[in-house]
Length: 136
Image 1: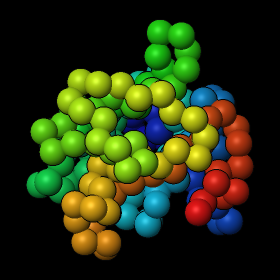
Image 2 (image 1 turned 120 degrees about the vertical axis):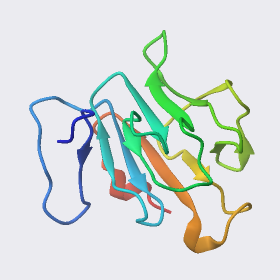
Image 3 (image 1 turned 60 degrees about the horizontal axis):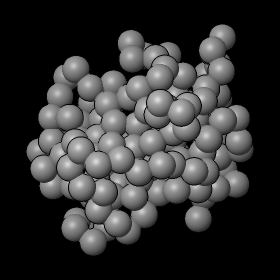
């Protein structure tokens, strides 16, 4: 487990375990990002060193987006970027929030904006679901 409380996992390979149960999992759409098990209440993604998940890509904002448990306990994504965070094919909009459900695709760099090999995104899975079944 890294300093931010995230835990890497692999679908069919060695899995790192933790005493904490994750409330959600993120699977990289194209393996450019690490797969994550979310155990803390909030995660920030972006270029900034203070982000829970720091991704060194100049097209990302310092803090690009957050994935967190909302006030009602349900997972949400908040866009904090200049260039946009996408939920499926919809741009969320700066400081706006979208609820997340299993199978949702979230993009930091959307396929409509960058070459296919540059796409950065995850498939979201709530709780302890088998994330490999959600890959499309």
